Length: 54
Image (cartoon, rainbow, N blue to C red; front, side, top):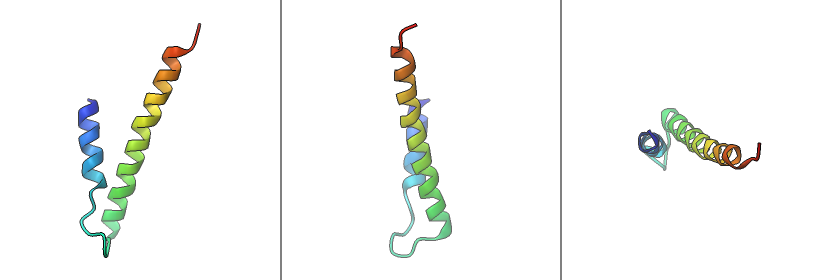
């Protein structure tokens, strides 16, 4: 599952053109960025949840 999300985020972050980006390219970049932040945020929340004492 993690491998699939990693591949999806890499596909979304790859823009077609850097000199004159299209609206779709900008959307794909930000969608990939949000996906990467979601993955890292969920990993941090998981480590917090697993390490807290009950």
